[in-house]
Amino acid sequence: MKQQIFDVVTGSLISTLGSALFEFGVGLYLLKKTGSSAQYALVLMIGPIVMLALLPISGSIIDRFDHAKIIRFSQIINVISLLLFSIFYFIAVKFFLLEILILVIILRATGLFISNTLNSSLRDLIPLESLHRVNSLNQTGASIANILSPALGAVLFSLLPFEMFALVQFVTEFLAMLLFLRLNFSFVENKTIIKVKHDQHIWKDFTAGLKYVRLEHLPRLATLSNAVTNFFIASINVGMAFTEVTFLHMTNAQFGFTEMSFGVGMLLAGLFLSARSQFRFPARASMLAAVILGLTLIPFGIPEWFHTSRLINVGLFAFYNFIAGVLVVIKQTPILSLLQTEVPTTMQGRVFTLQTTLGALLSPLGAAAYGILFGVFTPAPIYTVTGLLMAGLLVWLMFRYQDVMNITTK
Image 1 (cartoon, helix red, strand yellow):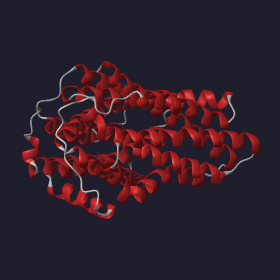
Image 2: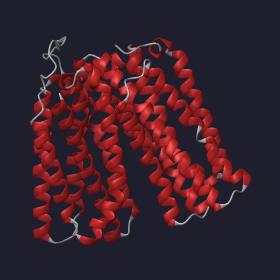
Image 3: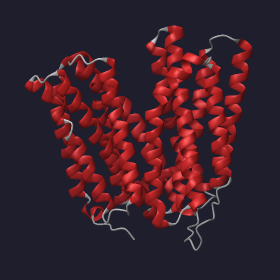
C-alpha cells in the first residue's frame, strides 16, 4: 500500500509542479513578446472553455472506460505533444501563438481527464481508511507546487529559452507517467461493482449524471458549496493585489510575503490532515471551514476602517492569507474523501467533472464581477458584503442539507 500511496502522491506532485512552471513560462513569454494582456487572458480562459466543451462527454468517458488506460493514454499524449512542441519551436525559432494555444488546449484536456480519473480511481487504488490521508497529501503537494512555481519559474525564465519550459514539463510528465504505470488499479479487493449500461448513448450518461447530482443530497451540496466558494473567493484573487499594492501601497516584497502565506497555510493544513484521522462528520467540517472562510473576508477592511500602519497591514494580510489557506484545505479535503466513499465509482467521473467545470467557470465570472466592483467601491464594503453573503449562503445550505451534515465516517 505504501508504494500505491507514494506513486499517487508523488506522481500528482510532479505533474502539478511541471504544469505550474509551464503555465508561468507561457504567461511571461506572451507578456514579454507582445506586451498584450489580452493574449495572456486568452490563454487563461482556455481552461474553463475546454472544460465546458468536454463536460458532456468527459465524465461519461471516465465512468465508462478503464481508468488505467485513460490515465496512461492521456499521459502519453502529454509527453508526445510537449516533445513535438519543443522540437518545432527550436527549429522554427519564432513566436507562434497558434501553436501555443493548441498545446495549452491539449494539456488542459488531458489534465482534466487525468485529475478526475485519478480522483474517481482512488477507491480502487487505496483502502477506504487511507483515502483521507492521500487526499490531504495531494493538497500538500499542490501547495508545494503553488509556492515553488513562481520563484522557480522566474529563475528558469531568466536562465533558459522558452522551449525549455516545455521540455521541463515533458520531463515531469514522463516521470509522472512512469509512476502511474506502476499503479495497481485492482489493489483494493472485494469491491462492490455496479454495472453501467454501455449500450446507451453517451449523452444519456451525461444527463443521468446531472439527474444523480440533482437528486442525491451529498453531491448536490458539494457542487453548490463549491460553486459558491469559487465565485466569492474571486474577491481575494482580484482584490488582494488591488488592496495591498494600489490601496495600501505595499512594496513588491511585502505583497509577495503576504501571498506566500496562503500557500504556507495550505501546506501546513495538508500535513496536519494527513497526520490525523478523517473528521467524524466530514461534510460538517468542510462546510464550517467554508463559512469561517467567508467570515474571514470581513477583517480585510480593517486597514481602511482604522488607518493602520503599513507594517501592521502586512502582518494582518499575511495572517489572514495563512488562515484562508488552512481553511481552503479543510473545506476541500474531508468532503472529497466523503464523495469518494459514498458516491458509486461508476458515477464519480461525472460528479467530479461537473464540480470542476462549474468551479472553473465561476472563478473567472467572479473575477470579472469583482474587477468591476473594485473599480467602483473601496475594498472594505466589498469584503464585508462578500463575507456576509458567502457565509450566509453556506449556512443556509448546511440547514437545507442536514442529512448530509450528519453523515459519519465509516
